[in-house]
Length: 424
Image (cartoon, rainbow, N blue to C red; front, side, top):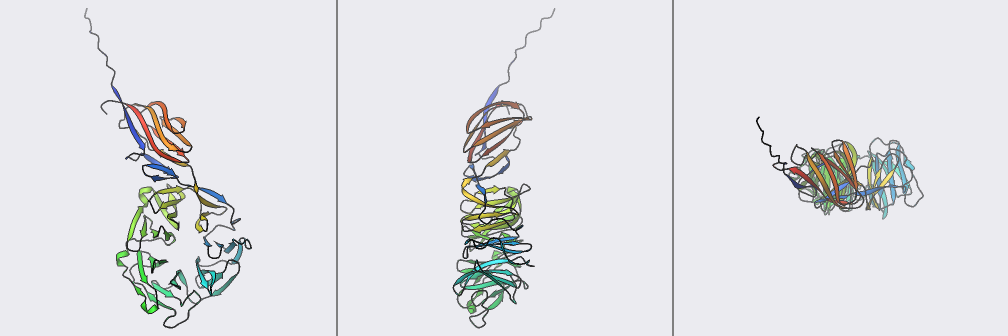
C-alpha cells in the first residue's frame, strides 16, 4: 500500500494598507456638492434661507434689480415691472405694463437727486423709489453705465457704436463738451456690458475686452487697441459682473477674469461638470453664477480671493445683489445666502477596489472633520451607517467599496484601512 505524504498548508500572507480618500493627492470623488475646497479638505458652502423681506412675488421673474441708492427693488415679469421699496409705501406695485425688450437698470443723480433709470428699447422709466415717470427717447441702448459723471450707452441698432450724454441719461445737450458717439474697432463683436473700471471705461464684447479712455472732455476720448484682449469667444452677456476687484464673464466652456491688463481663464467648466452659465452677480470677493451642475440647476459660488468653490442646489431664475446680501429669486419664493451658517454638503466616492480585483477586508475608517457627520459604507449591495468623526470599525469583505459622507461643517480627511493579500 502506498502512503501519501501529508501536504503542508500555508495560509496566504496579508498586509494592512491605508488609503487617503479625502485630503490626499488622488481624487476618489464621483460626486461632491455643497462643499468648497480649502487646503486638502472640504468645507460646506453657505446656507440658503427663505426670506420674506420683499413679500409675495408677483410672478416668474425675468429680471430683478435692487437700487441701493433709492432703496427699492424692481421685479420684471412678462406683464410688466413691479416696485417694492424699503420705506414700506410700495409692495409689488405695478409701475408699467409689458415691455418688448428686457430692461436694464442704472442708478444715477439728476439735479442732485438719486433715481433709477430703466431702459427698454426707446422706452424710459425714471423712479426715485416712490414715484415713477415714463417717456420715450429717440435712442435705443442695449447696455449702459455712468462713468466720470456721464452716461455712456451701447447702441442697440448699430454694432460697436458707443454713445455718451452731456451728463446724465436725459441730458443730450450738443456742443464740444456735450453728447456724441464713436465706433469701437469691429473686432470683438457686439457690446454686451459696460463697466466704469478704475479710471477707464471697459466694454465687454462677444469676444473679449475693449478699453476706452473716457475722462475729461470728449475730444480727448480714445479707444485703446482691443486685439490683445480678444481672448474669449462667445461671451454670455448675463454673466458679466464685478467681484474681488476684477471683471468676470463666462462662455459656455469657461469662466474668465479681467484685471485691467489681461484676460485670464480662471475656471474651465468641463473639469467641474458645470455647463449652461446664464447670469452672474458679484458681492465682495465672491462671484455667484447661475448654471447647471450634474444636470441640476444650481448656483456656483467662486471666491476670487482664494479660488475656492461651492455649489448651492437652490432653484432660482434670477440672482440679485441687495444691500444686505445676495438673493435668489424664484417663481414663488425668495432666498438669501447666509454666510454665517453652513449648508449640508455631500461627498460620494466612485467604486474603489484598493488596487486589486480580489477580495479584501475593509477593517476600519477614520474621518476627520467638524459638524454633524453621517457616513455610509457600501459593499456588494450592503450599506452600513456610522455617525461622527474619529475611527469606525467596519469589518466588511468584498471586491470593491464606495463611501458617502454628509456634513454641515468640514471634512478634512477620510482614511480607509484595508487588509489585502500580499503581492498586489
